[in-house]
Amino acid sequence: MQQEDKIRNLLFVINPIAGDIDKSELEEEIRTTCAEHQLNCTIYRTTGAGDQDHVKKQIELHHFDAVFAVGGDGTVSLVGALLIGSKTPLGIIPLGSGNGLSKDLGIPQDTEEALQLIHEHVVRNIDTIDLNGQPSIHLSDLGFNALVVKRFCEGDKRGPGAYAWIALQEYMNYEPKFYRIETDTENFEGEAFMVTIANANAFGSNAAINPSGILNDGRFEICLIEPFPKAAAPALLFRMYTDNIDGSVYTRRISCHKATVYNVDHEVVHIDGEPAELGEEIKVTMHPKSLKVILPIPEEEV
Image (tube, rainbow, N blue to C red; front, side):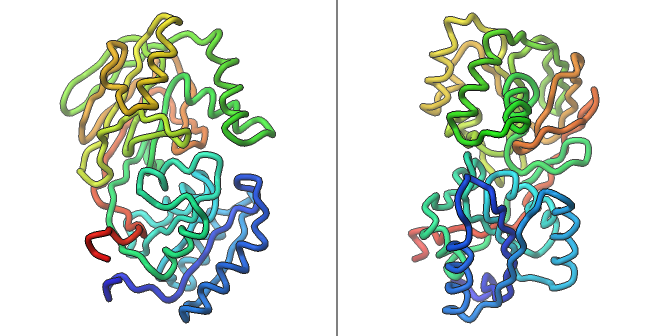
């Protein structure tokens, strides 16, 4: 690990209910790992009430060298949003149902391997975007998937199975909505099954909506799935799970630096897996290399 990447004073933001996993033993592992490497360790457990304000105050008071999100995409989004534009890097110990951003960053999904990042890592900068001022690090949606995310968040069951069941139920009666999109490269006007504003590659389910996207290239992609016959659904799914969604005649991808999305039918929206209210006009802005992240050391640097 390079000298400039060394960290000593760490905050761990743990979601106790993420992934329905008991975190008590994990907390002890975190404390033990930090003690073995002479690192200062502070743990904050989310409660679902005022967590963003509490974590922000912790960061401001203690000037941590890094903050680790221990949980799923919601926990990562909460912590990451507070670190955008700062010198403090985001670490991720993935423990959620999807863990989309951590997968796109190449962070180990095995907890023991991910814990090694506490003391053995590199720090790199990635892009972030915002939608009407609300930060997005990974993927945001309008349309079908955003509706499924909303129903999933409203339910009391977690995991891929629950998500798939909701998706199947909603798909049976879902109708595409009308959108108007203006970007600095090209425009779109028409109906779409879903509109994904992608800073990264794949959903937590491993379905790649933007397989060629790069997290630090200063651009984001607007990925459209246009209306398609019900019989085409299996082929679309297969393409998403084989990194070939761009090969479908029902998809379109716009790479750009800024955009305005007019949500004419007021369809539901989510930002990084959390439902959001953004209004009819959504301005999307790119912030190049604005977030530092803790990553595994590349093999060529080992």
